[in-house]
Length: 97
Figure (cartoon, rainbow, N blue to C red):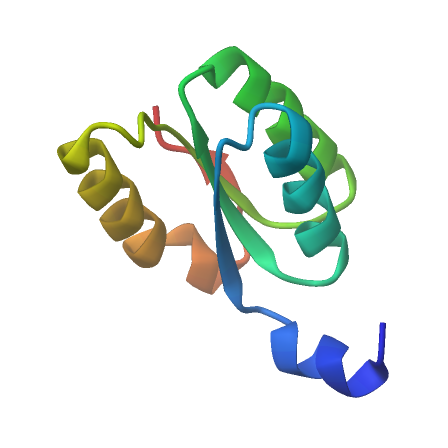
């Protein structure tokens, strides 16, 4: 990745839905490895926990919450929680079950 792009993206938060498998899972890892903090959501929390472990193992920041994108309130809750997740400021990581 271009050094300038890396600096621009560093410490930004990427929101990834459908992150428990496939493209969402891979995208979450790639964004995290590029220096972004990732907020990941999907219906299968057990699979999200696996992803969380992978990201934390690489000393990166992650916010995890169960999410069903067909439910409007789930989406609003997820976005607001990810946006306000207090640990982003302290560099900690964690799950909002």
